[in-house]
Each structure stands twice: as C-alpha cells, then as structure tokens.
Image 1 (cartoon, rainbow, N blue to C red):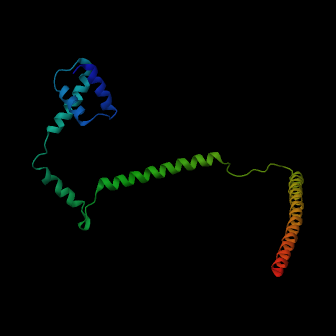
Image 2 (image 1 turned 180 degrees about the vertical axis):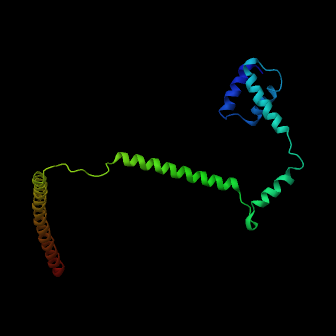
Image 3 (image 1 turned 30 degrees about the horizontal axis):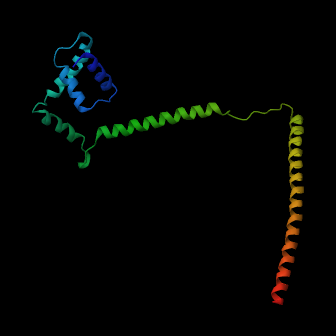
Length: 172
C-alpha cells in the first residue's frame, strides 16, 4: 500500500471511522518498514501490538484477590469504578447547576429598585395608570352592554319562533 492510502486510512482512524479490517491493515503496515514521516505513528501501533502480546503473571490472581476481599463488606462486592462514575456524574450535575444558576442571577436584577425618588410623584403616576385602566374597563363595560341588547333581541326572536312553531303544531 502506498503512503497516501495509509495517510487517508490514518485520518479515518483518528476520526474513529475505520472498520476492523482497515485497522488490521494499518497494524500490518506499521510492522514493516515505514517512511520517516510516519515513524511516530509506527511507534504507537507497535506499542499497541506489544501490549496485546503481554500476559498477566500467574501470581496476579493471588495478589489481587486479597485486596478485593478487603473491599467486600457483608458478602457484597463493591464495584468501585461504578461508585466513582456515579460520584463524578453527581459532581458534574452540581457544578453545571451552579453555573446555570449564576447565569440566571446575572440576567435578572437582584431586586426592583424604586423608579421615583419623590413619593408624591410616584403617587401621581400610579393614579394616572389606574385611571387609564379604569377607562379601559369602562369602555369594555359599554361594549358588553351592547352585547346584552343583542342577547335580549335574540331571546325575543327565539321566543317568537317557538311561539309560531307551537301554533303550527297545534293546527296540524
């Protein structure tokens, strides 16, 4: 394989887009002679290969099991990595909520400040605002009175229609 194809494969490898077969091809390529520009990558692949060939010593289980038994309270195994993952997740949630809370506090004022320093002026402005609301409510009340007239007229029409229907039924 030429170096340009290998470089394309490497780019896909670094982006985690290679298949297992392409990764085998890369490992085989880096076992042989490689151009100087790819020596660093060759060392990495050779390291991976060396680590895969290593085996645990026979006494490994004997060294690890006593340690694991110390972690075993009341017959249950503690999965330390699982507990650490949960703790790390909780830390992330707490820190994220702290920063979100800080951003929310920045976007809203701490308290509403008085807009008027003179209480008399504030009273006058409040009166103006309430008067404006009152005018709006009065206008709405007048409009509802018009609807009331329409409703009464509708009831009268319905009453006449019902009376005429009753008369027709009585004649038939």
